[in-house]
Image (cartoon, rainbow, N blue to C red; front, side, top):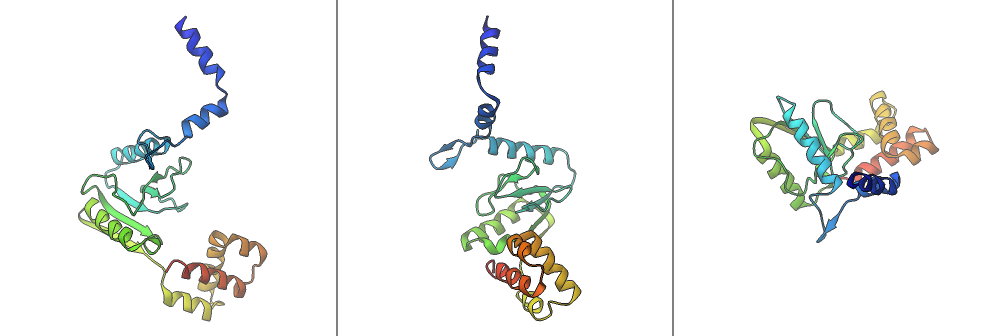
Length: 192
């Protein structure tokens, strides 16, 4: 009888309600609950990665730039891309000396001073002795060269790539490098 009641209860919930219930992020006291779908799935991604790699590598703020054989993390969790949630401005949920390599591209310049200092200290804490850290940030000189020499193949290729990926509305309206370069440079300057 107990089994029949459990089956009835399960069947009474629509699949959409069930998915909503699983994906719901529980908020308690302004913080994400450690039982939330987001937290639990991120913890599983991290655990699986660390158990199955000999040389752990951490990417902070991956967005959609997924690196093979790296633990890809971002402020925005993504189950589809196998991206674990990590807020660079807060304490990292890793033991000391976990990673051989730490990489972050175009994240550091978006952080407030306290968050940036946290990212540096936490990265150092979770880095193995003799490990490597690389943080890439926009180069203002490159942006000037991009504007002054937008017809050089390396610059026109960058403008096209950046417009397609970060200035989609502008890219869909015009394919002209002179116009697109302004959008690309403007977007880059917002991050410096």
